[in-house]
Image (tube, rainbow, N blue to C red; front, side, top):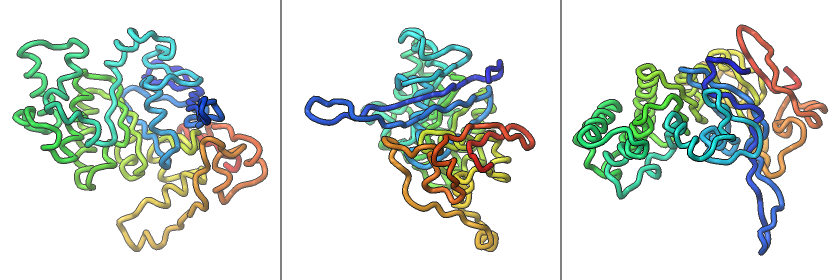
Length: 327
């Protein structure tokens, strides 16, 4: 997997959260949020990370940023193993890794002006002083298509789309190389989603950014991503290019996700085959044996219940990794 053009490499990442009970808060189990996943992100690409709510997408993003101390595995950023870095070393490297949050209403401090919110990373990392500080903030506002006079306003005076633009400006203030986008458009109106997505694509080209784009809206992911990782209950089901995933989905779970994406043409929509999943997502505290997806899979056979499928490259016009015994 190691390569010079890989900005991020995740190897067998495990993230368990302890479950406690009783007066003494004894540990009685683990929430297996991320259960041994491996992938990489190339420099300058957008990697989409998709799956149902609770599958471990956000946890994966936060593990890469080392906002959580991982249970096992390795995360390399620019060739450095982040788990081995001290807090001081991590502080320096974190300038190159930023996060855009899902909720534009909760992620901005209501007591700070928009200008102070965007400028705070510049002060934390000692990048600018004096008059240059205000000039940089004004430039960042123009960069995300907001007017500089808005810097004195407070978050409650902005719409949802404008707030998310402030969040994007804050993330880009320190000129990072990696931006983890945690469902950045899911809380916005559809028309505003398109505007913010276009803005993010333009900024990627302008500044040579690398995105990990976490989402559950597969239509948005297809539009913005170069490659896509499909997760289910803490494990990776499929990895391939965006076009290949939509044209030739191989894992039953991926097929079910894509069949739920609405198609604007009603004639085509009525004619296509739908894959309906039965039952609910199992608990990550006690996931199923073998393939985690087998209780809901229409193609299940005995080996699926007993043996975890290996994520393997089956080729087909480029890399196409699938974790399924039936493929």
